[in-house]
Length: 125
Image 1 (cartoon, rainbow, N blue to C red):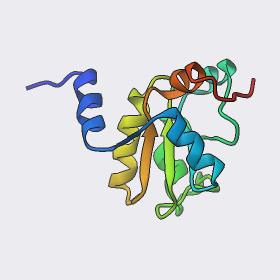
Image 2 (image 1 turned 120 degrees about the vertical axis):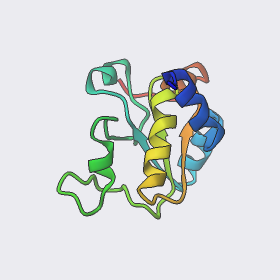
Image 3 (image 1 turned 120 degrees about the horizontal axis):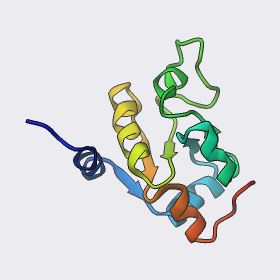
């Protein structure tokens, strides 16, 4: 039996917290969360959400592991963590990965960077 990428994403989204751009913006405004951008480096030329930590999907597990030499400051299993990608698929899958690694308060920006831009929220170029 096989499963498609779209089915994997749908399965992940049904089991995680999916946040709107407004919800993410409010959590960031209150200083309650770290925002993690899991897009690949070339995608950053489209812009970035201010304050987001870049941890590409391919390196996320290493950046998220406090015991790893590639660990990124600000990522911790007990800290509120919100992930985003370009449109919401990779970040949904990445939430499941972080949960498996022991992250207890993790969500994603449903619709990703595209939804953030469409909502008219600030970006950095």
